[in-house]
Image (cartoon, rainbow, N blue to C red; front, side):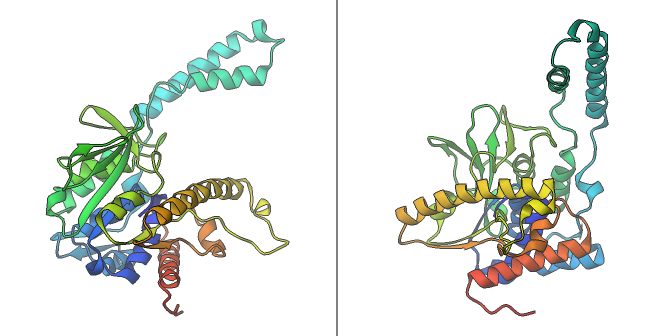
Amino acid sequence: MSGGATKAFYFHLGVLKVLQPHNISSIIGTSAGSVIGAFIASGANVDNLITSLYQKEVYVPKFDAWVKTFTSTMLFRPKFRNLTQQSVQSGIATLRLLMSLPAIYNRDLVAEVLDRLIDSQMYVSGFFDANVLEDLFKSLLPSNDFRDTDIDLYVTATSLDNHERAVFNGNYDFIDHDSHFMNDVPIHKAVRASTSLPGMFEPVKVKGKYYIDGEIKQTLSVDIGLAVADKIIISHTYQPVYLPNPQSVRDLGWLSILKQSLSIVLQERINTWRDLYEAEYPEKEMIWIQPDPEDLEFFLAPEFSFRPEAQKKMIRSGEVAALKALGLPVTT
């Protein structure tokens, strides 16, 4: 299951509603996919998680705990010390720029402003507290040991300094040409590393190395699934939207243009890997689940949405995408 913020979390939840986890032997999750993967692999029921949207919280027998629906205040707790430090440094840079105006009057002022603004951003490594999500899993899961999960769980992250992919799991402990498999890292720490979106959350230190979002190194770790199973189902949200002529994404604003551009890049990257995997593993069955390219409502939905009505629509998009990929009828 891919990353993609809360939008991907609820899309995957819709996909899992169709698949039903009792038919799944392994889960490979990255970023948002690691969050939903950790819940399901540890015994959470898909219907329980969906019900929490309506009831704000729901009791999960396997956890012997009440699970609350995600809220913005739960996941995005500002690190005020970092915010203050960055504000101070930006203020100092602005003051120095103003004092130097007589000397640089004949230069390109826009370039000077940009250069100094960028130089002043080197003092903090993130603006939100990633401990919140880690503490949530630490307190909720019946065990934070990968070896205790009901379903084998693999969580990926990216090493910030040597570009290596980390694969946290309960089975393997080795290093190959570009991946480091570790079986002695707790789930809460692995999920925190996998969800450390650069710029928002600080990199997470694990065994002396700093790790960030797992999708940075490799979009969709399909190779892990191919190594552990003969049939794999890949769920991701990196789907450009296709509009009928004469409509254009250009008319949907700059943010939609940016989202479409990134989706095209990621989709092309996925297609390249897909062709390689299907050529190398013709005996394996691969089912690819992504949003309907004509699902404009899903495309326009914000990546971080905490409104129940939006979350329900994202879940429905995941359901529809899974039903179509599996060749099952789509009911209203």
